View 1 (tube, rainbow over the protein chains, first blue to last red):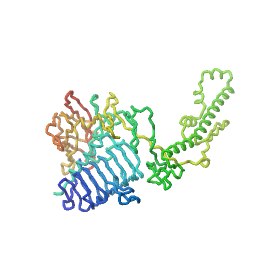
View 2: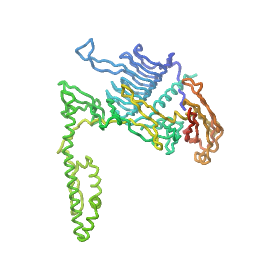
View 3: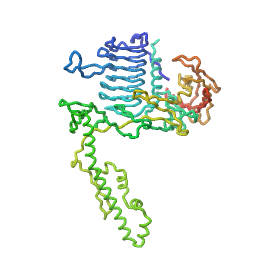
Length: 186
Length: 389
């Protein structure tokens, strides 16, 4: 049984594709942000689309005080062929992803049906595979690759366990029900 | 393996396996030939391939004969166990660094302008470090065995000379060593661990005591070499009784991903149960109403029947009576199904209990699945945990 969460309509924007964004969140560079639909962004979410492109899938749930920021590398550009300059890489978040509160994400790619815990720090150029779980209070150092169907946790985050084959089903059901039960107050 | 039961919140529906363990409905597997649903511990695993978690390099067990335990190109930090990455110095020498604790192979002296030479240097360093210790261990091991052999024979000669000849012929060497030697020595020599290598024996034969000296680290400087990254495995699942495959892997073309070619989950062949609403009926808070919903998420039609509760179960879970528990069979088809909405049937069970704080409610279920060729039946037990209200 999933509990119903009611919100004030006055505190949230709602689009035609079903995206629910709180008015207290900070979103920059909306031109470079693509969202498929049916996503929820809670209070104090920071989404930096001004640095690079951000593409988000469906059924994403981002809890309070999360920062989503594209990652960066040092490289040469046409404008500065001799000096190394910071280049921002695009951020890609797939479908059915849940990000818990107070976590900072600078990854390049997050796969489908993943869940990221509270107070996590995912540093730049990380790649998170499908059906994976990142536990609370974990730190992923830069350039880590999280394989599919794995559980990572710790400081630094290390492979802990394997997820069962039915994580896709569990994660999809959980997020679809969460979205259905996120209802405005009558 | 990770268990979602630990994260799940109350109220919960769990399925009880034959072994007694409880799991979520999605985590259970199903063997159609045995007509039984089972948990992960009641299935056997068969390794399909080994892969590196960093570079994704795959070794399929059926195709390759030379399987390795660790990746040839990836290493792990000896301090924090994070995966190392390449580094280029200002002098254009290659090496490895850790991005978390800032460990570098430059501190050991393992750098080279040619990157492939770095691997060779690491391998040589491992050989040099452990070759001397392995030789020491072998010498000590042989010395101990020879001493034990001699002592046994000498003692027997001193006691009874005429008996010795008959005994020595009947006793084998291994039996003699077991009879005489210390149990601790036997364990340590058999395991051949690094602990054994690091300790040196000093036998005191008169008092039958063994004095162990601690290894002196000042004699050798331990080098913090990068550890080769261990490989992980992907597995196929089989039923333990009939040995038929439940989950099989298949590699996708031109990619390092794997897809399941055969998958049999309990979820795919049985109705899905969900708790709709839990509330008190009386002002005195003695009667609880629990609404349980059933969904048919399979592709086939289904007949579903519930068997009544035994009195033992009612007494065990402090239930007095149960009202409105449906007994007849009912079918639900999948003819008119939309993408998100599926046909379901609701039944409401009212429970009358003594102490309304924590409840366990159990009933047995049998579902008949109308497959195109054959009619299958699944039997399993369901436990409903409602928790405190």
